[in-house]
Length: 155
Image (cartoon, rainbow, N blue to C red; front, top):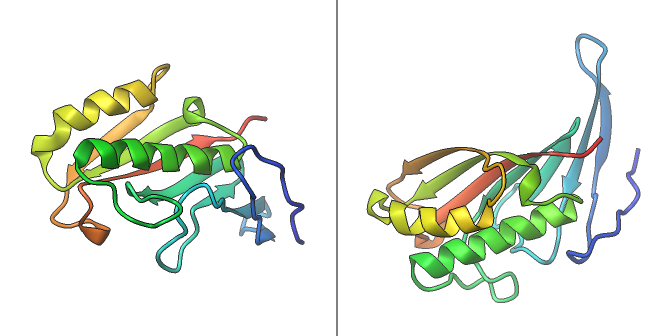
């Protein structure tokens, strides 16, 4: 079953697939690919986000410019751009930062935690989601920051 396009203020939305399946317990599962040109295109074989039974699973966003695919310079610029990219994906799903229930933040250095946290707090202003923050050895494109999120769709 092909899902109809959904209008969005975040640019074109592509529901390239809507798959309805029954799992072992005969529960209907609906999966939709969410994509927007307002965030960087996926740089591998994955989707920007997947909507599954009322939840939206957003792939990790880096501080890449959606038009040039260039990485912003410096931690603060990368955090801001990555959060803007995440917001664009959320808008494409018809939701916003207030619908996010869990994030995972990846930092190239835990020394960047205070600066990241200050910008992050300005993005998630009401009911901040649960969060894990981990330091990693290397991020794609040698980025300093990446964020992924899980959000809830409205009923």
